[in-house]
Amino acid sequence: MSVKIRIGNQEHDLLQADKHWIISQIREQQNDSGSVCVQIAIKKGNINMRLCSGACPSTGSGGDRQATQQELRIFELWEKHGGKQKHLGGGEIVAFLEQLQRIL
Image 1 (tube, rainbow, N blue to C red):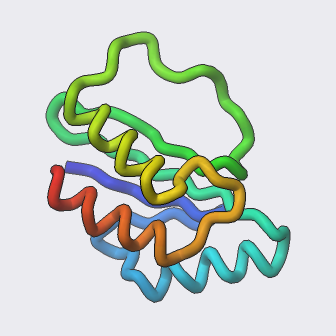
Image 2 (cartoon, rainbow, N blue to C red):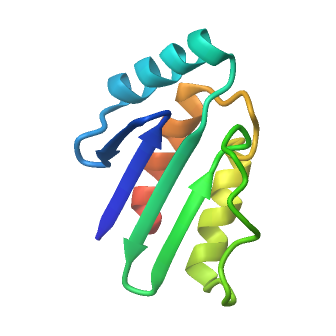
């Protein structure tokens, strides 16, 4: 399993990205630019997806295949925690990642 989180220009494996690092990176980015680009890449079994917050530059319309049921659950969870918003808080990301680990 591979889950990586990128906040601005900093990227860590989920196992190395504790909640204090996540919250401080988001605050730092908010202080610098007002909005934060958060990207989460997930690869496990038949799951292969990249989630991007609303502040990230658009890279296209997505993949070329139908999402699996598990991927759909992850997309729903991402939206529930405000993942598509431009002004995303560290608490929302931490809560999303904690629940994501239960799904995976």
